[in-house]
Image 1 (tube, rainbow, N blue to C red):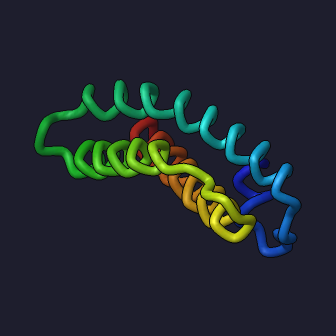
Image 2: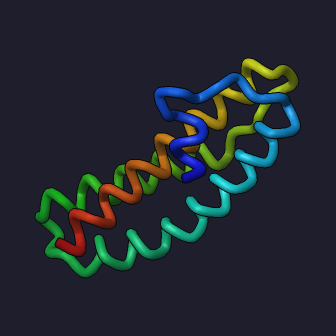
Length: 99
């Protein structure tokens, strides 16, 4: 739901306060997803492609978590979009690893 709010086809340009709330929510989702996906990925053989892709996705998500919203609305929205994409990627990796 939060991802769709940020990236959906009808995503409206929110107020700065709304973006801050979305960023916090997305950060929380990512922080919960990383250990789940990491556990699933590490259970796969070392030469498994899904494992490698999931671990790369985790590294990218961690990099995006270190970012901040910046000072303006445009940079805050961009950061929220980056976090939403990282969240989407982690969900996809989770799905692939549990299929």
